[in-house]
Image (cartoon, rainbow, N blue to C red; front, side, top):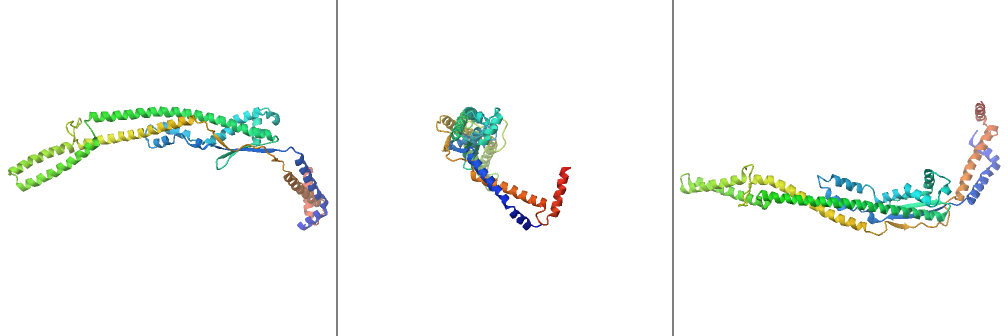
Length: 390
């Protein structure tokens, strides 16, 4: 048996191949008389102003804070964990909006179901909600009632818009309360640090630590130069010279002054309120403390300014009356059915019936032995039939 033998046998039985054409015609007629299913779609985009977080400046300011910012950092992260478009999609495709739509349009009478879960399964088969790469959200519905489909997608968007706006208001209110609380805490921190610095200067008889330290270092440099000059002059004048004796006194006095400004200091040391000079070793330890507190003061002041700005922006956002979504394409009344497609039904019916017809003819030819040289296959088929009968 060869493929050519099978082909020749199929040509002998060509009258059977009228069956696929009959089936294709039947499928075409069924598609013609079947109730048409229409599709409508609404396309929208979340308003661009809704994508901006109301605390971007405050978030940037808090990134450099090493202590006490964990609570606010977590809060800022939670505010940015979901994009507005993601939240809107969750609402639009959520159970609440779907059930409201089903009950409003009495879809239970169409779906012939009573349980909510079964109604939702039927409903979600007709509804398709998606978002493209450009951030455009589409809500499409297929239904035999095109006017109802148009009303349903519009109702779903209106419900979602109302819910989304409500959630935004709640979120902004919560954000505003948190910002005001943070603003008060920052104000208290700035005030406390300012008072600490004032007390620090008052208790240590300081006016300007950096300037006083620079003045002291300058004086130490001058003292060192004069001491070296006196030592050189003493060696040149000799030990018993009256001028050398006077220079020695001056040098010793300068060395004592140098030691007071450069040497060790007692535990209870405080700069004199009658002099601008301070001990350099003591000043270094105090300068580190002052720099740290000034850095904290600057940081808290920056954050307080950012918190004040964000508070005003959040208050302004709460007063906005502009629409949350931008309708790019409103739901339309379809003038042509989405399915069934008559040509597709006819082609599918023809392809399936042609395959079955071809298989039937070949099987019949092998079983009856009309196809030449098919004895081995016919024997196997006979064995198979015997096995199936047992």
